[in-house]
Image (cartoon, rainbow, N blue to C red; front, top):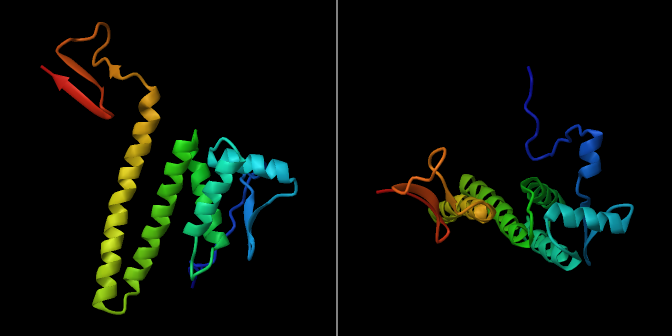
Length: 187
């Protein structure tokens, strides 16, 4: 008989040399705060700046501080949660500080939604159940709105009006961005 792995214990995935070289350094938490755990502090900072998609050290420290606070589990910051959050921010590849802030919010909302799902599954009474269900519902609606906001922000660099057919634009139908919303019209 085979047994399922323990879901609360993280499993290490095999990483290729390329993945290991590009990996963001981990954050080491202490009673005094946090620090980037890398043998070369300057390179560690640069890797973290790149992973978070921010412009400088101050922005990196600000986003990290916020992620540390959002990673709290059981009243204390959680290194495993934090590593997950940083990994998710990195995988979404924020291109500037606005995207970095939005992606950090998205990751935090996801973590909070999963925490609410856990509380909902382990609710002892109706009040806890209703509270967790309400919070989970709100967070579950927030996440797709954040995805849409990121998509809209990223598409700002694309042309505002796109042709609907090959060749000359048809004056009776068009698609494009109007006040930040994608619309199509045919007259």
